[in-house]
Image (tube, rainbow, N blue to C red):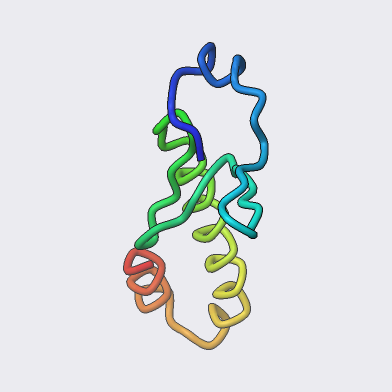
Length: 80
């Protein structure tokens, strides 16, 4: 992953790096310890991934709301 501003990253044309007998492909973002970082060190990719994950969990929780009281469902949703 190359790091820099958008203007500097547009100038880089190297997409693959040769290391001994292995070719390493340059990627746009990386996930390490649960935090997704992109090449500009902004949190856009991480926030989008968190929103997607949270929305998915709420959708998975929806069928269970019929079995729970309103207060219990609210507590579980706030805990998520």
